Image 1 (spheres, helix red, strand yellow):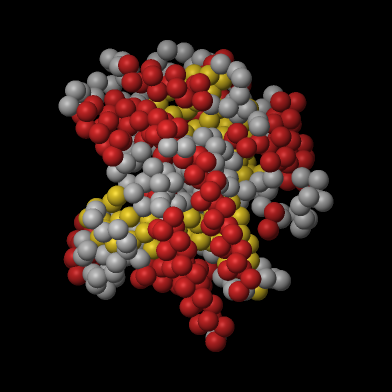
Image 2 (cartoon, helix red, strand yellow; image 1 turned 90 degrees about the vertical axis):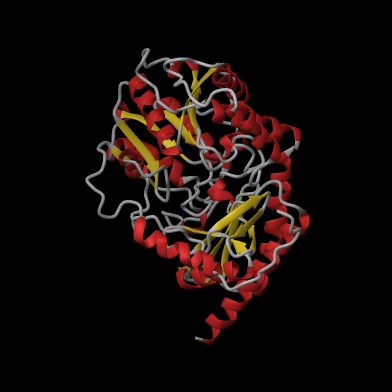
Length: 451
């Protein structure tokens, strides 16, 4: 893409995007509805060009898939090279070196001192499903607990683990049994009405009450956690929360499955977000940015636990496809060579500093939070009551689209703007995107104040 800066040439959506939208409505179920009002022609780095020639800054990264931006040249070359050799054999029929090399690399990089093993699948939901299979086989227990405000996927099991009802669960029951939800460490909207740090981590301590009132530890295989709750609105638990949960799980013989699907591969300033807390998960589900834009996921876990299922009891026809393995190997190489986890820290500081300045000016902004380059602002109608400003959030996002910026909504009330900025973004692009965001907030704040 030759354009160095974003330019808006036509109305959004333009005529070509509108034409394809008509085709979509005729041929694709209405459930498949994109947030952005345009169709893409090309993507490079932090930029997207639509069919009508408009260029957008992408602060979504394909919901955290493109940490390396769109079409990173080295990843594209790795994919092209492998595609000339062989595209597929099925790893459970004929194995290939790249699968083993990628597993070995992830085993080396995963947090903790215990020996690790890894196998590969296609999507994040598959990774969570298989982590659950392994945990149940290892512990011999059926129960699972996840957090309020969590998101783990759209399959029956992962939808059951997910906490948000609409649009993910409404009308799709009955759900998988033996699944429970724990209070989330959502400090801005504390389940217990307390304030951190004086709360003594009541949300973590609740696990012992949970064993008495909901599901005995003897029946609970694992607690499934996101290091930062993604769809829930980038809720960042206090680091001590994980230490306490680890302590309680060890005491009662319960595993920790860490869902690093959105937080992994440099997004939060570490290769894995779990590293911030210093705990070692028993199993880690990974996907999204691991493939550099291609679909690949995996489960990384302590070797003893990963070996609980016998030969043939885990597998996937397409999982760990040779092209996606080469792509993932190149992603890991680029992350290290270009120092992108450190870049994520810089991006996060820059964005938070700008948002804090905005918070001083715009009362719509109730809370700012994030870890590394995973940053969100929570919008409220009133800072005292903290009533969610869902309509204002939708208006700001639409205004951003019209000005050439792609951002995402999140949260139980769709009142949170989340940003997953490509780690390769330039300083000029970053500042321009933040300018657009502020102008959108300012406009909606002004209009909202008149009502």
